[in-house]
Length: 540
Image 1 (tube, helix red, strand yellow):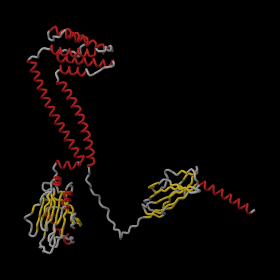
Image 2 (cartoon, helix red, strand yellow; image 1 turned 30 degrees about the vertical axis):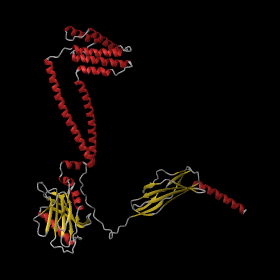
Image 3 (cartoon, rainbow, N blue to C red; image 1 turned 90 degrees about the vertical axis):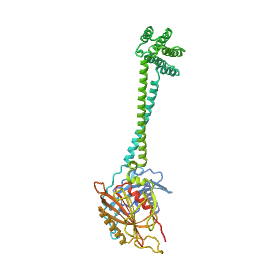
Image 4 (cartoon, rainbow, N blue to C red; image 1 turned 45 degrees about the horizontal axis):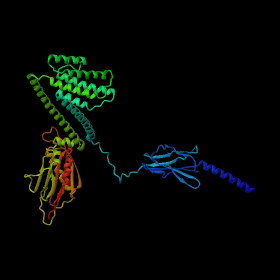
């Protein structure tokens, strides 16, 4: 009896176990339940089920108040008795507090399974103000607007329009040239050439024959209208033949009867083709074209010689045509030159930028200095090698023991002042090796700079100092800042940028000062190039 009861319980347990596997087991987990603000949380959703089950994970899971960084594809692990499906999701939260990750739902064989919610604590980042100093918020800095991108886009657009205009102009010019060449030919030559061109056509359909005969008769009519002074284009066939008969009777145009008969045959056949939709017989096309050409030739021979007055009028007309032609050539040359200039200017702006091209053309002072050939020279004692736009001029009014070299003035676009102050003489055992500037030397230089600028009329003098190493390896003290200076010829004070480098030796100091307008686009480039060229020649 006991064995039967035990067997029954085992059967019931196996039944519910299989049913539980059919329902599946859904688990959720995170890599950490305590994180700091902005730290990534790795969330895993795992489903254990039998092989062959229909599983559907949600496409857009909801994890508010957390933000989703990444959703990875579902990973499948095949075990002997079941499947393990895992989806990993990266979450983040930027506010401190205690938050619950909401339950996630998965569809298994048409049924909905839900995971448990998980509690995650997001902690603030502790800042030790004793070890980590706090600073005031920096003030808003005014930045000059940069229109380079807009100007470059407009330049490319204008270039496209200009090139399109050039192509249209070339096409129109070629068309006008062809028309002018045709118009410049005498009516006889123009008619003969047109008939020769018509020989190249081979009409096949009735419409093509109609177009062919229309061209042929129009060529003859235009020639008669220009040379014989007959209104041939607007006349019917009978009217045109009647006018030619009258001219023959008057002796103005002596044409043979055979020529008039052939012309009448051609014109009547053309009327049949154009209006009665008839098709000429084979072989008559070439004959009609030959008759039209003979008509033109005979008309030219029958025309009377031009009078002296007509010849003078023709010469005056040709002279006027030459004058108009020269004027057109000058106009075209100016237009082509203008287009070429616009294209060259636009291409230069697109490649180098608006301001470099504009400043080069307008001879902007500092742009000219930066672009011209520079000079490398040696100055003072100890010898200092320097590359500058112009050779520095020695100042003869310097105090005793001081050597001073200057380029430009404080009233010009760029000012450079190099001063050697060595009151003590170097002993043979000493080298010209600079040393780090002490506080006293730096402060003395700052005081001297302020005093010098104030004596020149500068106001609002702001000074900063720093240490820097030049590319040549020399350690220097850097004193820099801004000031407002009353330049000669300016209606108001100019905001200027200045920088002074200080090299300290046992026997004295070397100072190099640069000054230029703060909004100058090339002043800082000139200054950097000069500073990078500094090299000290050591002597025993």
